Length: 170
Image (cartoon, rainbow, N blue to C red; front, side, top):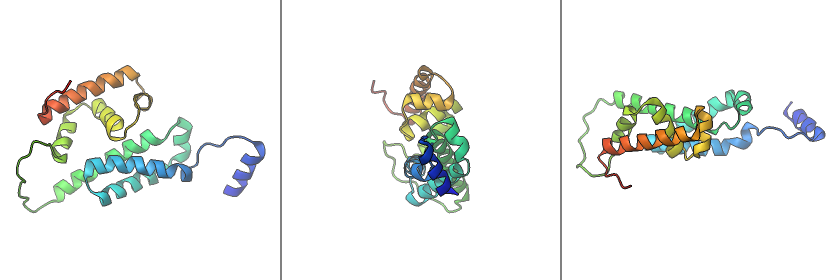
């Protein structure tokens, strides 16, 4: 069936939307990057990225009609990573010895600080800085103006700096 569709596309000269197989490496890379930054574990991040890509594959026709599927896949990966982190945190039953205090905040502190942000600010931070998407793509995915993305990003970063105790370098 797929060969017939390819032959028809080649015969008509129409440009086909990117198929999932061609887009998979980039989608997996971006979703893995977000998941790894949130979880800090390569295997867990790979599982999350695989699940996000599987969900994208199941909805591929709808996703490509709406445009670029990358922001959607990144958001799904971020949500899955946060859910997985919560499950792992509550499943831990053993006592963990706290490491020596450092000046660098760890992933748990970052997760708690992100949880304190408003939903829109958290989405902007995840898409803009964790997924490395340009402001225009973040604005298009969230359905707002680029200026709104910049405002939410600036306020969220200021709140994160305050929460994590970092000096404002600007």
